[in-house]
Length: 182
Image (cartoon, rainbow, N blue to C red; front, side, top):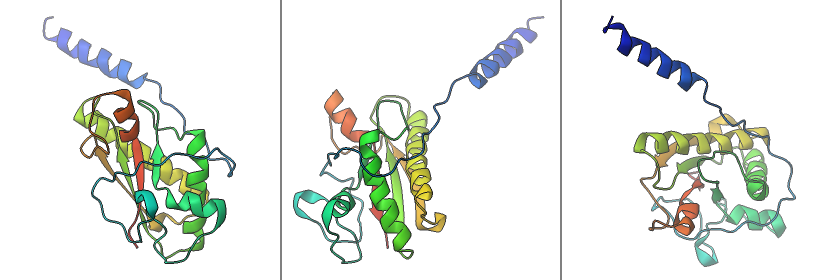
């Protein structure tokens, strides 16, 4: 009888884990979302392209993008709410602008780097960073970007943009970085 108690507990834990709710990722709407802020401190990753004023990186083709779309392309950070991998409405225009650019430049390649804040276990944060990178990838695919142009990686909490243990630092660390590699 005592041999069956641990087995019953494991089965109950598996059953409860299977009942956990998951958030659905909403499709990306067209441009028109409010302007977003950009963090200027990077993770040390290199990108192809020239640095613009304020530390933001511009498109790697050497072409000057004009107007609101060009402003959005200079931004490379998509931020997320706590414990979420759902794109925020204010970041929609940024993702749409990069999607249009990538769709019209099939030789361009992007690495989507998922990051989290320091809260949670290392394993959980690696998974959450991957889900965030995949959410941005799905949004770009909806814009007509070829899957071969996109790569994802998760760094979890390993590469914080801002050091600190307060809400301000955590908010800046919950992000996906769009890194142009070619």
